[in-house]
Length: 190
Image (cartoon, rainbow, N blue to C red; front, side, top):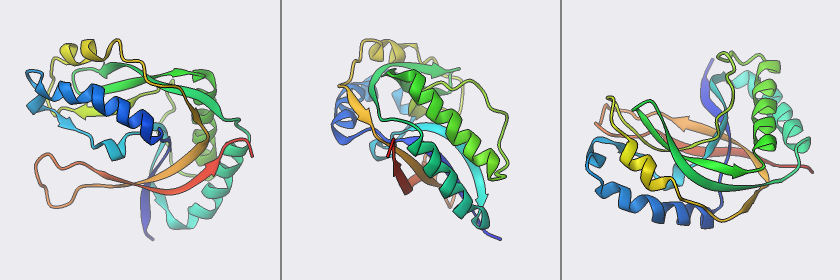
């Protein structure tokens, strides 16, 4: 039986991505930036729930439940805002706007997978973040988070719940990143 590595996400629109890319570009010149594995702008997203390997036979039910979750959630305002880090291993941009609805959508996506019998890790409090870079070793990310501290992106409306497939790197090429592919999207509140 084959499976797909999947996660639910909200994808920012191109104008918001352009703004963030302009703010991130100077970070590539900060001392220590060469030690980070920078994510591709085409892959920037807010993960709502990570499903891991989902068996093909579960997909129709998962699609149905994610569609219901999307329809039960009204579109909401978001913007990319500031930055942060997870330990010394991940640099991210944050979110501002209707974070309560974003968290609710994350909860609904997680519940959709659980009800479909997708084996899920323990659910933790959702921290909205868009991963910009990762490090294999502990790194002082303070100069990077300080540079993003005042970033205020334009307001946009989150109007879709996306199901994204993660293609892991093959061949052991150093620094190679996963590729992401939008599999399906469901409009919110319809």
